[in-house]
Length: 206
Image (cartoon, rainbow, N blue to C red; front, side, top):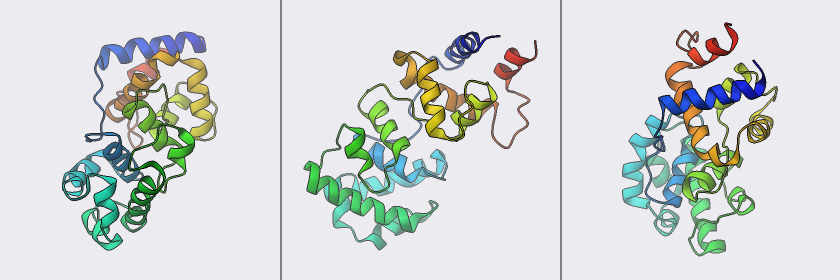
């Protein structure tokens, strides 16, 4: 099976499994989405979704977040990994949004990635899921599965993202990256043995 055939098979099977893909992180706008994604680094989406309702009730806007002390933010997100660093980032992120962008989340990678706690993956998620721009955010699930499916030999998520964008049509990026994440969690978890990973079996157990 060629790389092109494997890519087509993946799209076909994922579309059957996940015709609709909800955004995993609860949010109400681009700002709360960006905060939720920043919090999700090295933490499960489930845990983030447990913490953010209380956080957003108190500080659901850059104005309100900036008014809090770092210790107050840390107390609200203490159940999340790296809470000390993330609390500092959230406060400074809010301050810079107010200073540079009148409290509005910017719509360019350069401006997003200049904010504390916002790396390329977080910026990509905000651009795709927050604003609808074509993007292919790559997390560890996608990196692992793209490697497993022999669609990339990338050593990191940056290289894998470039390969994904070359292989798949731009108009499917925003949906497909979520479909792969859902598939990875359900059928091919990192700590599992991949017994349920039928897509890999279809491609290579010929």
